[in-house]
Length: 419
Ligand code: SF4
Image (cartoon, rainbow, N blue to C red; front, side, top):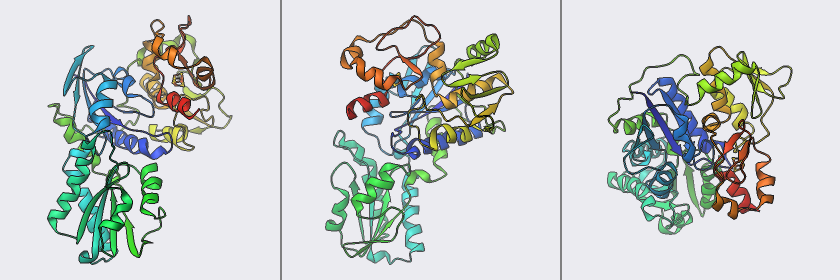
């Protein structure tokens, strides 16, 4: 039996931190050696929900939705995109287990309470003069998504620690500004029930609260507002993920690894290695691969030598932020030295998540007539020409060596909507 753990998050085209926190959990779970393969998947970034299961070779796969609430994404989007049928899905020789969201685990309530207690102590606030506002995302598409945020507020209210407790929402009612109408205490502790320090928690929520991010306490309508870090930055979240994964019945016991290039998805590593050995030097997208090193095709003469997936991800994804992993603007000033075939694959998987598995499964063209009718050749030309993948969903290709794209990606759809 081989095991894989997939953390399914939202991702973002605006902030690197939204998916960044999920990759941080992934790095820690790989280091702990809890499964043969550990990876992430996203709605907005790569690898996409509809690609990721093909990237792992394990026959026992657990998918944990890294969302703070059961709602639209966990009950509709992820099951649809991953073709899941309930808690266990058996297909293509794999058993795929689907767990609850991390927001449904009781530890998240502890984190909210910790945020409140820390603020009361450090700011020396009088609890009798303090309101706690638990802020969730919410969505009018699914009223259930408010449930977990409301449960946090209910718990704090039952504890009787502060004078007033409310739950408010970024995209639903009651709204965030309603705090100032429905409560009276001179102090407000605002706890964002979000995972990452992404665009919602650093821009949208502070704006709705009427505060400047990073400048606390802020004075709003004569009230002192204290804004805490989001719940997902708590280091123990990886243990919550593990507990949820173990509800599948699989052990996920830690076997700490010293090699940071192990524990990545491994589908296609043999085929990739053979291609590199056959040609000595092999171009994959904007990468030049050899048995000695992986570097960008236009690498500079004195590149930084990177030694971990975390460093590599920081260079190619985070600084500056490249939300579309396969765009043709790969930073050039780096290289990774190769000492094992698995490491060669791990480097490519870190730069282009999910691309090797699709390349190996290239098969014949998969022109999708619905997608072809939906989008114009001009849109495909202007957006997909800046991507290393070939949009086979629009136009088939005779070439066997392309890195295929089988469905329009979220980046493409967003760019078309933006016009
Ligand atoms: S839809 Fe276009 S831009 Fe998106 S991954 Fe496919 S080829 Fe690239």
